[in-house]
Length: 610
Image (tube, rainbow, N blue to C red; front, side, top):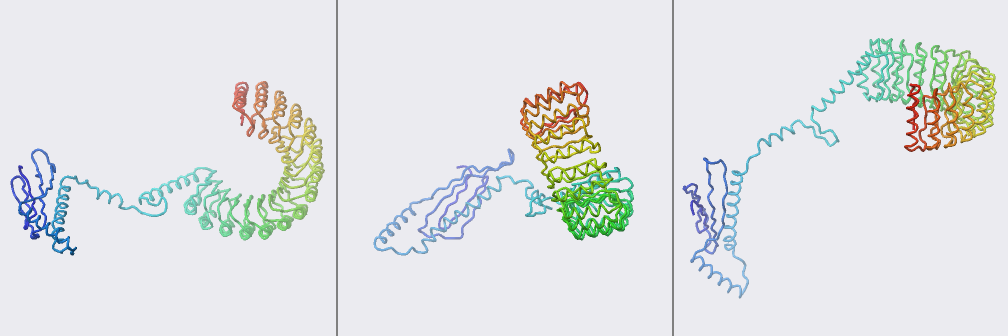
């Protein structure tokens, strides 16, 4: 063969390499046993051509056994001798025989491995900068087990920069607008420290909403020195932040000498009795606060007592909101004591305090003795029965300032309704009456209806969630045909049915005052909707909002209402609610066409919901 390399394993083996006609030899310094087997490795040349291309090819590697006559004879004799000895006994394998077998094979493996690594290094291209790039890409990474934390350090800095930019935008809002709503931005205590500086000498923002932002008691320290100097801010809303009693104490220390804020909202802030007491002490010193909202907190009798004590000295607070707390009968009695000598308070919200009949009795006693004018009394959801309604009725008879009475979701029943009705016959100040959810039937509603014959002061009447039935609907509708001055009539969930709808449809043909009629969830069905549709064809100059949701109305009822709207060329209706009924695409399309027709004829928008 041309240029070749021959490797022969003999007693003194020599490795000969020939590259381009030049031989290089390497002799193994190990003698092998005469009984060893020998191998010949024939390796085809490794040609390197620098003129044509700079690449190296491995053309052929051949391994073949080398044999000779002498070695063949010696091997035959040895084999026969071993065979004969094995017939007699099985001797232990000599060490020199093991070595004579292992050494040549081991040398072959080692040299093959070295040659292969040499060829692999020459032939395979080296990846350019792989290791360096990988090390650079991983350099600076912060690895963590927590999700989302294996980020480049620049990423955290980017987030921080964006947060600061947002806070800067918020600060610009504070300096640019009089009413700023930043509720639910979750900027926390640190953000509040940043934004509070914008309020220090701000003369623009008058109403600021910081509700639901993760602010704690520590964050409120940001207002120290700020609210004392700011006289432009009139309303501060911190509702939905877990400031607790400690936060209330901190804020009260700051607001004690504030001369700007008139409305403070601390609803759902985790306030307890200690916080309420701190607010009470602040009210003794503060002379600018007009509205205080402490709804849905944890204030008990002790806290109510603290607030009541402040009412004896405070002469500016006009509206006190304590809905959803735990005052009970004792808390109501404590407030009554404070109200006796207070002349400034005009609105008292006590909804959901489990006041009960005894608490009402004590409260009404205190209100009856005071010289101040109360315009709003909210006693909703307080477990008041007919006995408690009697005390309320006595106060209603004497009051000449009360405008809004709320007894929603109590249990006064027909007896209590009759007591209230008797009081309303004498009262000429109350405009809004809410008796919803009191288990009042047709009898009690009839008593209320009789009041409307002579009373033209009541403009809003909520009677929803009372099972008045068709009879109660008829009693009320007959009076409202030509009497009263009711503008908003709410009768949702009153079980009036299609028959009751027929009575109200007849009433709407003559009534000229009702602008809002709520008949939700009364089981009107298509029959009731068709009855009401007939009245909509007649020109009605007052009705603007009609709510018929949850009434099992189908396409037939929708078609009737749509035709009525098209037929009335001077319809005043601006809102029609048919949500949560059983309308298909056909009924919805008919109502949509009617809405478009009304706009074309009158150029007035009619909002249709389905």
